[in-house]
Image (cartoon, helix red, strand yellow):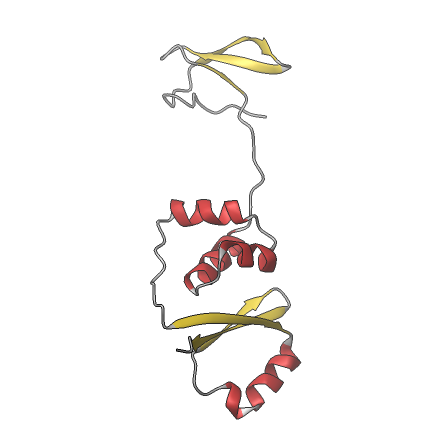
Length: 139
């Protein structure tokens, strides 16, 4: 793993300063900060970040998004906090969703009663499609 700069001050003036737990330790000459090799975490594709934020804004819960996309609900919560996403709150409607392939989607829209009475959005989900429909809560 390659060290570019000090994580404390950003300086590129550092020296080796021993080994701790089998990892090389460095000391910054500018701020006297000791640091080790940076860990590289698992990077998640931006496609999943965008899809999860879209689905969150559509009204799905973190755990529902986790089941659909296969991304941890904790990661989704962190992205919502990171990008400061605020979900509009409307108690009159609740979303229902279905995952369909292309032929099932065509059959769904061929029936007129599926189209009227509620808002519908279709989004790509790999080789399938996700249909989100808003329905009114019954009084």
